[in-house]
Length: 281
Length: 281
Image (cartoon, rainbow over all chains, first blue to last red; front, side, top):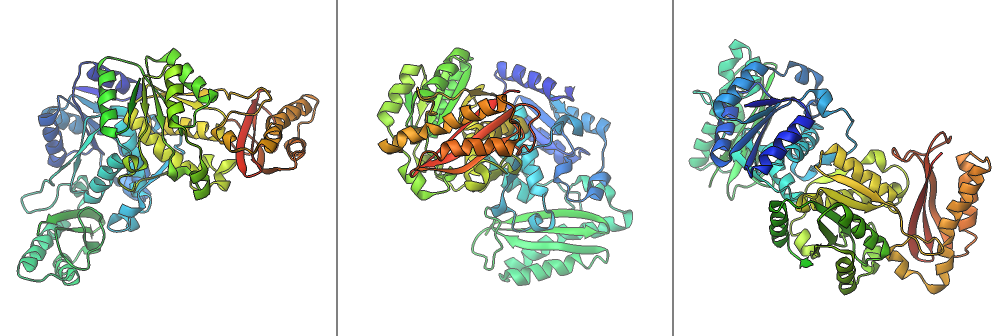
């Protein structure tokens, strides 16, 4: 497995892989890799013979400096996880390498940024769109793998690809969870030990909401209240949002008439966690 | 030469050309081709062995419906010009083919849209950026050719490519002119016969400005006045803007210390024409 740090070297490797007719896949990450990322890489190896992982903490998508600075890092272990999972190449550029020139282009997707993380993280999806578009052009992958834990990001990137005709397929992979249901996330590492159990209440709230739905409660407002009560039964949890939205348009649902997504952002102490479930009807 | 009308067929042709290791170039146009376009195609044939021309009047980049509706069309002659100039493929999609789905993505480049056409054509460069990014992803060209007549567009696209790491080179080609200096433009076809001579005053004004500059007048305000006076000596000419800007940043210059661009938009009767010259110092 090659570890590449510059755009020039990356171009060379991609050109070489292309010339050998390899099917290229990309797993974009921000590092501090866990089993969820490993599952993405594994899924990629099943559909492609040249799996690339990018590791880049993209400052532009952080709306808070503190959040950026405390984002955990672990390069050596990241490289090892990529190798074990079957990656052929890992790209780890510096901030200077990626932003040698201040970008003048601005990308946004207002229609899919109205709800969920959009309003509470101003600039976040603009930063995501910019870096992902750049990574697509750098790797020219046939497939790109994203975790559905970041459901809104997944839908936004799917739409980016469709809207700009990127010649690639976006593959969304199911969220990988701890035994108690907590969604794997690099941010879990920042949780205080006394908050760890409370963090599992997020997924538990979704399961209780689903049960209520199956028992005939179909009003989104009522369902949201049920789930919120579960989450804040953890005294150190604070719900930033908990919304029921359409799986594609991400519009808030006032009545449930088909599949829906329950998505939440919760502060467990100081650590902001997000999670979601898609409920088929 | 193949004439292609659907994205599916285009993808097939591009894939085939790529599999033969062809060097692909793209000349994006809005049709009603003239000698300026032919020069772009010709230039492309010298650097590439698979020259593609796209012909698509992109509604999204028109800020006026009337302007869109009166934009001239001539498909049969366009196809002939492409063939004569050595193109291998012409892509002529319908509006429905290109905008089957309303794009949710928005691209903009505020920093390079402050002056010149930016403020007077709201939404124009956003429309250009969107369609050009899409065409780049559809054709995956090694080279893309743009006329410097649309100087601001040329610089914006160059920056789009750099900012998003599109794996291609933007080639800017010199403006092709009528014998009296009028820049070739599809819009010239809409000029009334009695305005044709007045239209040539735009380029003439640049030449007189250059002479004044060579004679020691270096104040941009004074230079602009000199050129404007020349243009409005045509009684049916109305200057929308005439600005002296930095060749790369497109910022208005208050002092001239290096190369500069003089660019103007002028209504000759009802027809809006643009032109520019780069003056090396």
